[in-house]
Amino acid sequence: MLVFDGSCRFCTASVSFVERRLRPDCEIVPRQFADLAALGAIPERAAHEALWVTPSSQVYSGARAVAKILLRTGRGRTPLRALLMLP
Image (cartoon, rainbow, N blue to C red; front, side, top):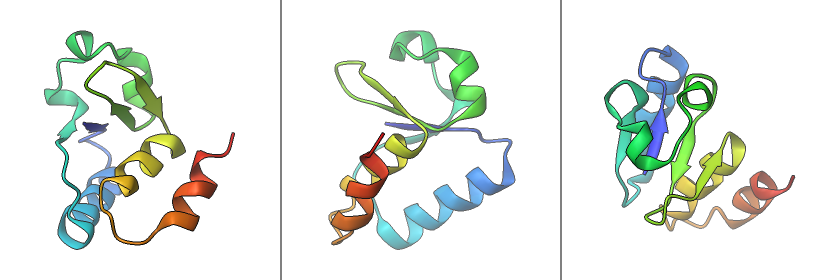
């Protein structure tokens, strides 16, 4: 699941683009509607960065969250994903 800031225009536009063009096979939820405590995510982090939450409640943030959603598209963006996963 990708959790993003639904009140951020850039975030919302980016998510809209990903949903329309890349069609990831995952759930995408604005942080305002996500049960962050149940997901094991810290609300303060969700207010400042995108979060990728795995089914086992592992949380990735920022560029790593973006890389994780690109992995769910299966659209040949391997070099970009690899770069985004670097520390």
